[in-house]
Image (cartoon, rainbow, N blue to C red; front, side):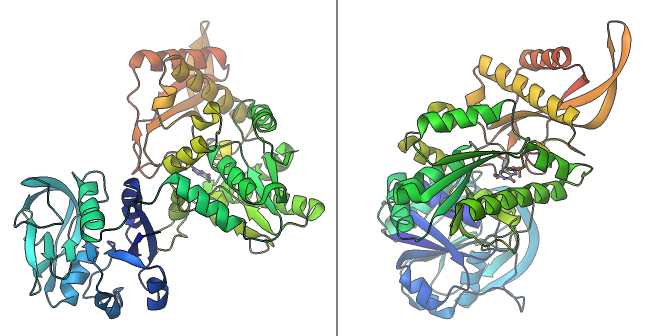
Length: 507
Ligand code: XMP
């Protein structure tokens, strides 16, 4: 498949560049900036993008692209730090400037194929400390902002371009159009990337593996799609295992088992491990420790099952890209935000190889695949649920009482959103609970009960999220139901923090 290769110089947004390009059906792949020339050539890119990154080109340890890349006679687009690399490589000057974050007006000048069709100006999203002071000979300025004279440069003869801003970020107007101009007009790459081709290629790749596969399924869309893809590839050599860890949503264990048995002809096993998980979590309050414990217990159960029912060579998981990047184990040097149990929590002693066919994908891409594979509507529209389950929605120790509060109040939130036809419009909606208490009055009597936090967010890919502006009447109804139906709750609060700086889950 024809493709664009993105060299990762360490920006949090590196993978978003690929994602935006894939949105217009062009295959884009992220590789480390220091990939060997042989490997890069093997990928047969039609064009190369240098991502942004936190370094300065004049630092002695700055990551640099191999000189030979410029001799491959391929179109190159440098973004932010990548832009500075281009300026630096061709003999221009990069200087330390005042930090510029956020939206700036980019004035477009001089016709260029990169910025054609953009009109006179666009809002462009900046996040940089250095800037190009002097552009190299052979290049012309094609756009400037108030603070950056050379915010966009081009050497059309060599098809080499640099832009100081981030076209991959939604805040840049027509950012996708810029990437489209680069990929389609300049690199002339074919639009061959579709979820149908992803399925075909993935099934093809998996069908070549030997040995049996054990796949942990949670009832969520990611692990279900993982299982269905593997089944398509290797049929009965796949065994699915569902673990009830006692940290699921209200009555979910029964629903999941029923759904799997009814809809999919998979080898399906269900294991009740409620007590095992809850006893290990007893007394534990630290969020990362809770995540580690849940992750380890899952692996213990999987390996135990594999030993008794094997032989298995592989353990398959529905890991997605946001899990990978936020666990700090991506190819680029992104920092750890949370240890997602299925990525950062795998122990050294695990003697199964890991199969993660969705590791490069975002949730909406997985949803598209699920639709193609005929996954039932109910599962398709089910909100994401974290691997460590209610352990990360309960602040402090996981106790039976807090589990009960979290389960019932989350059910109420979901029911009321469905009733208002808002469930499908929001990304996630649940109730969290901690140890904080507040005084209430019930039937003239004082009651000291728990505080429940309602969290409803809008998001496209879970990398960022905004709190949903729910109608006040709906919040009132949810609050009334929770305090009336759950004896131990006196206060209901609504979380109005976005991601960043908050995260979607409280822990
Ligand atoms: P945060 O809280 O990091 O969550 O903003 C981003 C998205 O990931 C989900 N999440 C997880 N998913 N394993 C998962 O498979 C995990 O350990 C995990 N932790 C958070 C979360 O529900 C949200 O959709």
